[in-house]
Image (cartoon, rainbow, N blue to C red; front, top):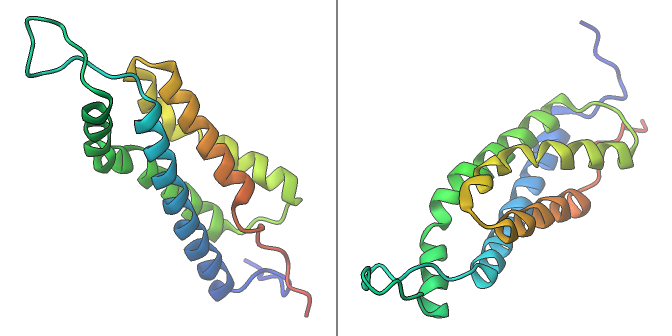
Length: 144
């Protein structure tokens, strides 16, 4: 196992992973608030016989109450993907790196397929792609 002198150091990799994790969590939180705001209201559980829709505010609160579960189902696997990518530290052009990372970040969104709303899936895809576009630049080889 050879260690190239130009490879990023362990500290540089950890710093990149930390910065990515912070940016990802902020992007996920904003994305979930937008998802909750745009999501169609569901049926009111307090009036099961009338099939009445929830108010927008009640629907928003309902979706926001699901955010910890969605964090576990979507954000944690995404953070694990970022962790693996960061420690791998493979050298590739920035555009290829962002496209590859963006494609890998779509994998945890399979959970949204069972949501019953295409809008929810689209909003989450947009925010995962947005993160891939704004994530810190990939680990470049050092120029010693």
